[in-house]
Amino acid sequence: MLKFVLTKIGMAALVALTVSFISFILLFMAGDPAIAIAGEGASGEVIAAVRSQYGFDRPLLVQYVDWLMRALSGDFGMSYYFKTPVSGMIAERLPVTMTIGFLGMSFALLLAIPMGVLAAAFPNTLIDRLALGIAVVGQAIPSFWFGLILIVVFSVNLGWVPASGTRQWTGYILPMIVLGYYATPAIMRLTRAGMLDVLSADYIRTARAKGIKPRRVLFKHALRNAIIPVVSLAAVQLGFMFGGSVVVETIFALHGAGYLAWESISRNDLPTMQALILIFAMFYITFTFLADVLNAWLDPRLRTA
Image 1 (tube, rainbow, N blue to C red):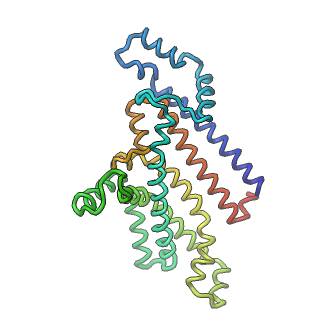
Image 2 (cartoon, one colour):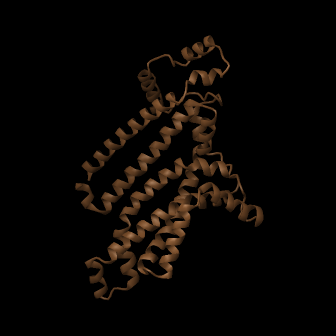
Image 3 (cartoon, rainbow, N blue to C red):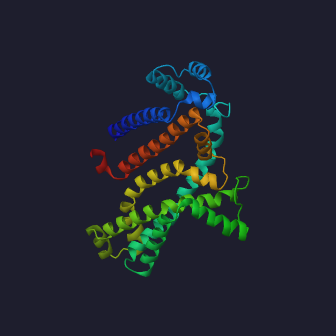
């Protein structure tokens, strides 16, 4: 198990280094940051002075190594637009993004896994068709449109929950539903497929032949083995939720890291964009690593794979 964990840690570190380098290069290729800082109408002398002041005239590899060393110590530099330390802005806004991300994943798991289990327990019935229909609708509806519909119905017309903001805990309900419902279809279908495969296994027929209660067979014996692939998918979906929170936070006016990403992109704030890309990538890599370790703990066969 220790060898497996160390191997996964090495792979995660390599992926993180690769992502940081590619994102650093692509952001520089998107435009000259010196022009963005100096302004479109700035003269050549001013642009050259800005390029020298911020070190943009150095080789790109030297700039990357310098940025990476500072980033590892938590120093992402100063924001070109907000004129404040990037690390401070992210630390202030990241809790909002993490809150709606974890709430959204909890909503997705609580909705998708029971639906998948019921659909597999009663295949080709009304329950199965209803679960598949909910999954198809969830995957077909764009997140921004679904969010706007929820605001109109539950905030404007019914007045049950606030349309935006996080001053009250109820402000997280609609963003949680939008993020969670987007991840529900994939988790539900994977749970259903895994349960159908497991329920046809020999040890399940043996358990039924011994007279074990159907509920115990379903949840203790079948779900325990069918849930293993769901762990990996949930980790991937959680990483997507953090990265995809840009749209949801913009719709519901939540000042989280996703909304900060949109602000930095629209204003060409290079240090903030670089920091957010690295942080979102690290979330994704960390969740994937934890999912691999958890799967190996649940299924020892994966340790030798």
